[in-house]
Length: 492
Image 1 (cartoon, rainbow, N blue to C red):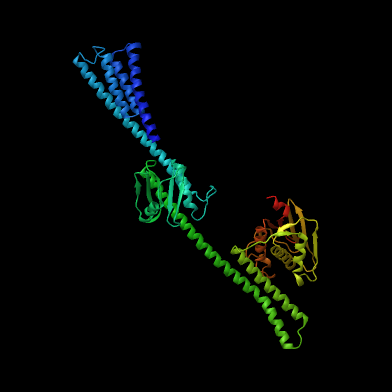
Image 2 (cartoon, helix red, strand yellow):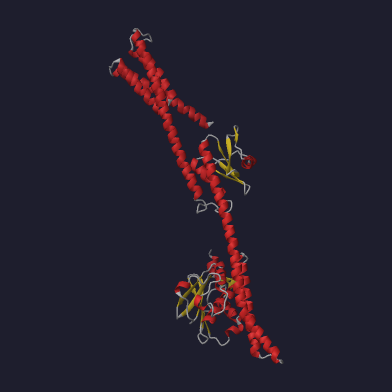
């Protein structure tokens, strides 16, 4: 209603402006400047042409009729009356009126074509903005970017590009209606569903809402509802085609990602089985040999054979534990039970759990008992420490020490495990935390599955810390990880 009143007011203002221009020219030529009738007629024609080009046909027609009457009354004898004495002046008056009308029509048509061209140009710019926004969806836009997030962003982009007060989109695959705009669109959800399922357009003359289907290759994907009169049919269907392309592209990408995830998961399982099968062979062979020797010799088994059985059994247990831990992490089932714990207690209990693996090895612990407590899942962090210490014991020379440190730095406690082993080549230092990756030159010499460090990384990052390595070939390696202190965590 307010829009209609504003439109009527604008037309009235233009009509008054057209009359004002004719009156001003009449006063100027009748009272101020003395000119002949031909000059007056040409001036009126130019004014009418400008009015038609600037405002439109009806304003120009009003100016033409008014100009004809003014020309007759003030400039054709007898002046001051609407009577024309000379028959030739009737011809001149009629010619003026026809010329003014034709000029008004031509100028109005030219203005209409210019306005139509401008409207199409704006629509093309808006369509480009919509297509660009659709193609770039899923980025950092403040909207969800996965699942039905692609469809949820579309109404916002359409409303923003075309300045619509309200837009609604129904997506068939998710069976959801997404809305955008500062007004509520009076479109029922079932109308949107019907348009998408049946592929038919629908318009409500009472509410002024129009709904079109969105389909690609004859397959209905969605439907779009907009206020009638805000966007042309061509632009609306172009938006629908763009939406169909983007929705189909999103669906194809999701299928491809799912297929890739399935393939990658199958590949990981195959790699894990291969690694475990390879690693199981050595300890099982040792256990089998030890048990066979005991059975052949009879009597009480020797301590050395029992030690071999125990050692290799522990090794098998560690391999199975690593596989189970990685499977839980991959499935997102890692659950932390964090409590304030002293760094020195974590190190001590982790070393105690390594048992015979530390026999005849020099372990140096440098950790101040006054260090603040860290928030940690004790079992998980002890697993990390054991993994790092175990790696050092495997790769370092038997007579070289392994140093464990804990120190406070920038609100976090940094744990480190350093050895005097062969070190890690620089080009492989960034890959050792990848699943199943092992240093090439030592993979066949030192047993392992390539899961320990990836598990350690996932656990540390789940605690809000980070893990890294410093190493120089021939000089040893130092693995470090951080844990936030209790005081630092409480500040958040």
